[in-house]
Image 1 (cartoon, helix red, strand yellow):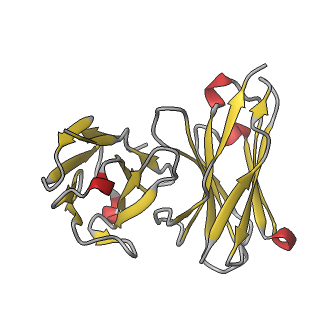
Image 2: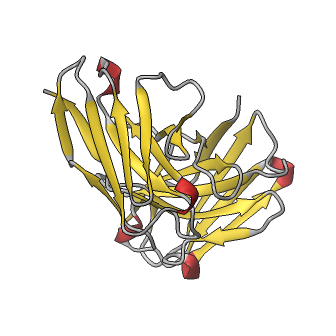
Length: 120
Length: 108
């Protein structure tokens, strides 16, 4: 059974960079056809897709966040990571990692989520 | 970006009743790439339906999806106590996939 687990700081200061990782167990992130995505959900609001990374390392970002987002993979650790730069209070949210396969597919496996608060 | 509008915002029903949730897209959803998720407090969304009408693995058959183009519906035939939650639709057919704002199904 595929499992995903987010990790990272729960508090980030404004203008700094938010960094989260997602450890995958029960499967390899290098498996052909698998896409690994990040979704965030501000408190009391609906989810928002941030971006996805393919097993080959190709990345796809939400146009609204593209200028601030970087996704990358660490195959040796079987994990993938998110960096979001120049954060503001509007970036406060629960951040989820999830899998979808193929590219145009819903998210079928999700992590439990990691709440990140942006505050000084 | 395809904007998804869900209605109603809140649905107050009793266990055993039928729930009908609507998701309207601002433009036609490519290949009916429309999914429905259930989310309970403190949990990640759970995939219920994809391709507008296909149930995900392990989803009970009281959940059904229908629709095409710009109009989609999630129906729960008989509400069980564990079905009271928030439901989101999602379109994943474009490079800017998006979620609707959700419908909360609450106990009347």
